[in-house]
Length: 222
Image (cartoon, rainbow, N blue to C red; front, side, top):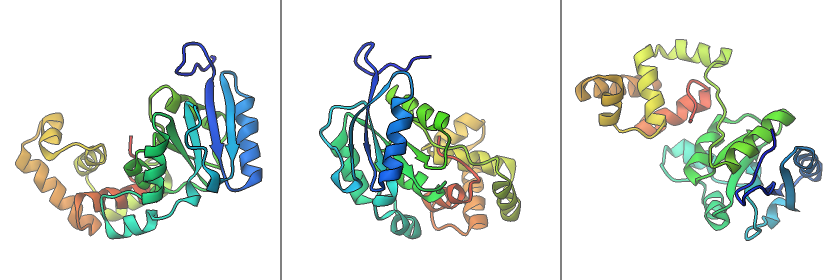
């Protein structure tokens, strides 16, 4: 099926920025080889094409700093440089590309307002799908919770099915009251589940618990 950009039946226009020529050239080849996608700008990561009229901007996530500090502190702020780029690029939607499958940067990218994240190791079809989903106004965040490592971590933490449900809804931005309504539980019961999750994950806050769970692949931000 042909992918269509935001301007009627025009192809999805994509701007690419990456500090490594090989990866940048590979992205260009993938994009130009897909029906309905076209590259309108391509530059090194330190020359981000902000201001270029494109549907999607694919950026080199590894070039942006601050994620590790944010996650270690459990703060609810985003990497400042990535946040500034996402804001400057609007209404162009940003897809963050990282060198490996990093659960920490999933949280950082979401906090910065990026529409999605993909890994260099993802296949051609997955990268094209990520660009298409972002261009259509959706989001693209990896599903990680089914991996063997994630299953082992869940078991080590001793999380119950209901605690996982609460944790996933917290990651989706739901309040305790909203979680109670969605799961048909009392607010008091949900708060008890939240306290149990914080204790089992040795987390200082709800955000800290979400960050730890995403990094371990136990839940995904969707």
